[in-house]
Image 1 (tube, rainbow, N blue to C red):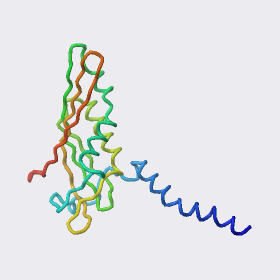
Image 2: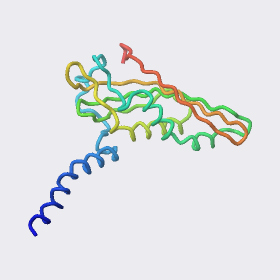
Image 3: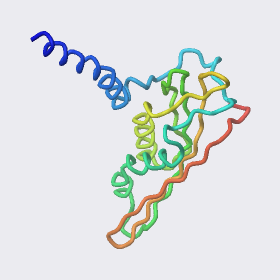
Image 4: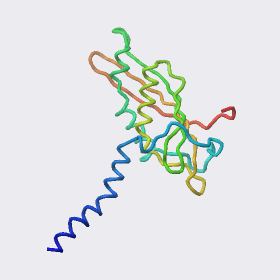
Length: 170
C-alpha cells in the first residue's frame, strides 16, 4: 500500500516544475514590467543582443500569427487594396529575461500602434537576454514593417523586421 502512495507523489513532484514553467511561458505578466529600475546599467552594445527564442523566423511567425489584421483592415476604405505601416519598437530584456520599457513609435495608425504594443508585450516570455560573456540587461530596437494586401475577398499579410543599432543621441 505504501508503494502506491509514493508513486502519485513522485509523479506530481516531477511534473510541478513543468507546470510552473508552462504557466510562466503562457502568462506574459510574469515576464513583463512597465519600467526597469535602473536604466543607467542597461547596455546598448553587447556581444550578443537579446533574441527571440527560435530566432528571426520564429519572431516573424509570432507576429503574423498574433497581429490582428482584421482590426487594421476595418480601417481600409472599399477602394484601398493595400495597408502598410511601420512601428519602431524599443524595449529592455533584463538578464533574467524580463521585458520592460516597451515603446512603439513611428506608426501612422493608432490602432496599429496599440496592436504592436499588445503583441510585443504578449511575447515577453519568449526572449533571451543579451550577453557579454554573461547575461546582461540590454536594449533592443526593431523596426516592424507590416503590409496587408486585399484582392477580391482574399486578404494576405506580410511582416518584415529590421534590427537597428541604437543612435548615439538616445
